[in-house]
Length: 281
Image (tube, rainbow, N blue to C red; front, top):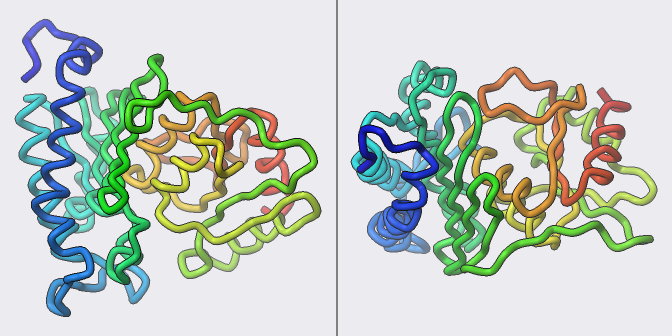
């Protein structure tokens, strides 16, 4: 619980571990018991066959909403499933109160298919600035955290993205073709060029973690949903990377970005990918 005169930074100093515990408990209670055990009635479609939701998504988000709200009274939760039910919830990102940005199961398609490439994403933001993030790949038992100005860590070890290996093709994870419009496909197709090795992305949260670890050079994404990006973008920043939209500005979790955008392990790579995306837009 935050004290009346306590800052967000002071709250995080006291309670970051409590947030991590809340994320772990939600996954243990609602996600992992259903992993590779989902019944047909526990899986639904939202906008179409590539947009899935499960009971694990819904119940984990409800649990996180309750537990995170209790840790920080006066905060609000912008969760993927809550926004699907009521799009007006998203407007909280524009307000002054602290906002928890929650994706209970990022990579639902992988989760449904029994692939361990999914994670739970939580970020804490205020006035459009992401202050802290938690990324939990429960099936892999990996937990990454970032606090603005204090670095990014994976299982307690500091993350440094570092520059790409000279002379090697840049590996860039891009929006999956199933989720892109024809116009977005044209922009992303500009990455199919000499010196770049694009591939379709999996869980956005895990792709951001790969960039922060220096295992992936960049991502290029064509959608704005804050719950997919907030946690990972802070991980990348705190590991030494950066992110750019088509106008050369950083990505804003509040929206209104020029898309597609990129996040990369260093500034030079981000500029190169952004320049290529502009040629196809």
